Length: 152
Image (tube, rainbow, N blue to C red; front, side, top):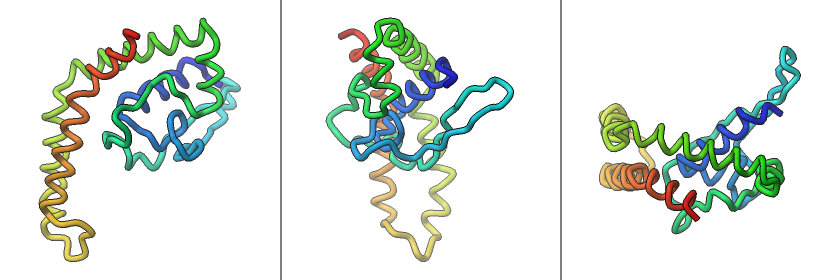
């Protein structure tokens, strides 16, 4: 496996609270594919089904409670665990440099007209707005949550 890319992949799953992917799912590793790059003879994970990102499932996603076997083994190794902590810190810094609330609002603004005019929508317009509020709240609080977990 391309370990640096794998650690970045897991750190971003943690950052966007993707509790239904490879690293943290409670249902068994999910929503990823593997790709073998013949040029470097390394495997990579490719995410899909990211519909649970930015949605709280628990009081907080514990970034050190890995469910994917490779990440579990990494965290059991002092050197790999330290590399993962460094990647999590870098991802927290990258998120802190963005206006996440504005990004969420921008995504909602793109989707809102389509949601309003959808004749077969599965949720009401009010439910859509409530979901936007939850996603914004999770996104805005995520950096502080990541940094607090790194401090323990």
